[in-house]
Image 1 (cartoon, protein in one colour):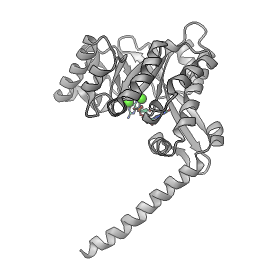
Image 2 (cartoon, rainbow, N blue to C red):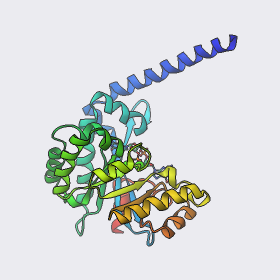
Image 3 (tube, rainbow, N blue to C red):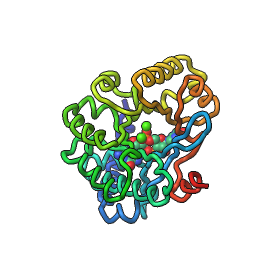
Image 4 (cartoon, helix red, strand yellow):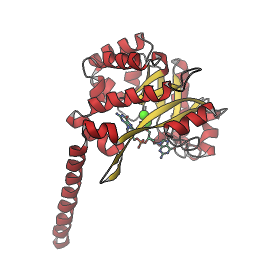
Length: 272
Ligand code: C2E
Ligand code: CA
Ligand code: CA
């Protein structure tokens, strides 16, 4: 009991340090910072057979002058709470389109962009995406939006309206982190979607874990039957890749092939 009291003090201190950090981050998240301190990296998505790059996922980075690198896992949830996700999300989409369209003379590379639930359920989201595509001269069928199943399950009607308009215009929709929510299959039967992304949790050491093997094989087979694309995320070692190839998964993304690259590194890899 005596020690318990002491630990409670430490815990309070840590909590306040964390909330201080969050407050600081919140105050530094400004439209000016967005122009100067944020950047995009692009992680290639590859054919499992040939290793050829078929697309990229845009991933945001923030180098804050005083605190250094801040992880998106830290600042995206804050931005989702305080509304900064809207200017941030528009910036990501516009930059991703601009940075890849300028060197993609013969054939635009497919670009996947992460979309937060607050963006998708915002009235006018689809229109704003289509406006950015037009403004950047980016072909709609080369854009893929990555959304999680939670938002589809919780906000069916809003999501349906937005997704219908986007897909009518050729934009593709992928489910990110498939199978980590509580309504994965329900979402699949309710929405027409283009791609399933199998999360790293299921892929990590899949060659050594028969439970994961059954799950991954099931997802791949189901995606095939539903005429959807399927991509495995977070592949780090050759054994994982080998299992996926044998299971019939044709697309992969992970450190085994590429870490996230900046615009110039990506251009180098794609155009040689
Ligand atoms: P996510 O969408 O699941 O993105 C994949 C994350 O896994 C990225 O982390 C990527 O760098 C990392 N990763 C890729 N391959 C491997 C691998 O082989 N091994 C391991 N251990 N990790 C790998 P990152 O860039 O730190 O992003 C974290 C999360 O932040 C993303 O998860 C996504 O949910 C969110 N995020 C990133 N950029 C954006 C954005 O522009 N908008 C929104 N709304 N969310 C974003
Ligand atoms: Ca993603
Ligand atoms: Ca993911």
